Image (cartoon, rainbow, N blue to C red; front, top):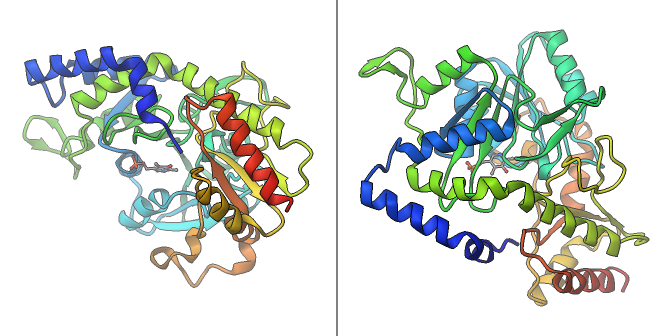
Length: 379
Ligand SMILES: *Cc1c(COP(=O)(O)O)cnc(C)c1O
């Protein structure tokens, strides 16, 4: 699904040099590499504050802690996402409220979202699933109208631009009150272990968050709030510093691969290719509105599971993200949920399949994969 070694070979010298410098200086925690990466990421994103932390799940949790959400507060998010999003809501004693997604973008359905708002709702967590932003224009409008926080789960969207209705461009994760991302190795900007970060333009919130990641300390050994221990280590920061200047190139390689996939699937009646929303009608090179963390097809003729098997038999990696709606997971089931409220997620879990997507895919590999898919689906 990903080719981390191929990518490493192209940045090997820089990464190895920085890592051996860290080993020589022993500045493993909170070293200069972490501070430099923080500044470089702030510049890249055009955001006032980046707060590095240990992983993307922590980033989400710390963002919610920093906003002062209290047990019993309702937090609305999508039924079709990775479990981490809803896990942290539940862990903090908040009430997760799952809503359905849109069939064409896989992102939170803003109509269902509005219906789910109650007087207890305090926050919305849009997930920019597979690398394309949720409908932030409407989400921000609803948040303003109902006085809600917006926490972007940007683990899959780093580097993506959101092009608003008025044509303005903003980096994903910097649009709501706060954004969270992951640097898990297979993410678009991945390190060589675990890592994450929180973004915000709010000075007071940034100050609060910097204390929370460090045991609630604002002054050494003075613990003003309950915090956590969540740090990005220097070695991971060094890897991220080598990769950040290449992120736009990485994302454009992914988009290129996506364009070739979609071209090959043109005219296939049983295959639906990913839809681009934004203000662009095709996978264009300039707007960066989709960074293709995953390239996800819908298979309409009921052969999805058989296709997975067929690709496995041909040594082609593939993935089903995600096979079970969150509202049906044992940990998150709730008697308030009704099946008829989740028609799209219930359908998508049976139709979706993600093909290999990374920066090292070549023409030949894409042709091989698409031929195998098309041949099988039409047989
Ligand atoms: C990867 C991911 C996370 C969690 O990130 P970790 O760094 O693995 O903790 C959260 N949300 C989504 C949508 C993700 O894809």
